[in-house]
Image (cartoon, rainbow over the protein chains, first blue to last red):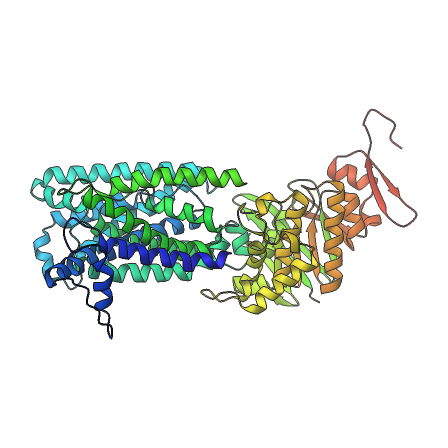
Length: 340
Length: 262
């Protein structure tokens, strides 16, 4: 039965992409959208009845948003699953570990150090600086959390994450108060620009997401081995510290990059991997690919209500993920416990 | 079959010497059982072989030093079952047993058909086929112990280290687990080093006992040679009768201190 989950999740992701392309306040009738997309595939020609202006809405407004949402959702879910694996702690996600706050601080510093000069850079410094901030935050969280609680304590790591988040946020506020000129830029960055996504944003995060996902994907078997604890994993011949460091760096790189375009979107990194575990089992061979696919679907779908609920203004996607995610998670938890 | 030699092995945790200058040779196919009171250094010795404790001196497998080996190569030679293994509750028995194949899989590789065939074979041999797709959290204590031994056997290492393999089991499952180890040892020609608290069982299943006390090797020999009333009184501080049964079994029976000794 397990092997059906991946094709099923793939189909769900495809349906989500179509839904994401079909719904919006302006544009063509919904059923014409799939036809128009098919029409633009090579070697296929269908009369979809979509005008070129409507096609622009589909291709330049809705599709970048759908693709970006899928990248962000995949990355947050996969990072959450990976952090939970290497820290052997079901409670951690990119937000609880302080990664997002650290990345936010890193990005703020770039803005205050005169962003305008950065156009001459070959690589945009914003994701890199966000990455450095996120990595520093997760390392501090890990060192502090394990120094006082030992590796067995799940709560100490989370508490350390909360402390690091508070500290990074405080420093960020302090820096912003001294540079009031960039407050607008920073806050629009924190809130994210999923709703105004362009293909440029997709191009900005795509390399990070691809590299990070590829590294995490290659570690899926080792994540299973990490579950038996450092001692036994070492006795089985695994290089425990190397695996932990590589996975944390990869997950942090990916998270920081997507946070740089999506802003702070909570719940995804904890809900999707846990839902996957409850549905399809606890092996990372299944969790890793399914988190990628389900994370993409989850965020594309979560992004849809925001477009139409308060038209013409937008409901922030973080509100939608919490609103959809929390009851969904409780429901899963309940049904699964009932069957045990 | 593979031999295991210790020459002057010591393990130190901070300022505390857990094991001093341990020298011994475990012959190919031998079952050596380490006995001794808590804190004698039994676990430290096993952990040093498994690569989990830094040690001084030299440990050799078939004459070549173990410290020169990579972690993977070491795991191909030595399988280690800790005293309280970590069993991820929601992992299936089959997923758990296949972890034992890690030493044969490259860092980013995945299991081959050969690996899964070995796992299937081990599950069959240890009578675990029906439990293969059960979550290990739902298994009983005896079943869990079988699954842990199955993982060690899937490792196909010629040396098997068992730290208190029966401490969590009732008397029936203790016997089952030790019988299983003994049978596997004979089938695969394994060299076994175990640490055990139950002296009667230790004498019954192993070829040789080695008594440790406060990090030092005290005496080694057959059960009849090591399990002597005076020795046990001196090193365990226990008042016990040692009964030699007709079939050669040595039985250690503690008696109440208020009652008559012999």
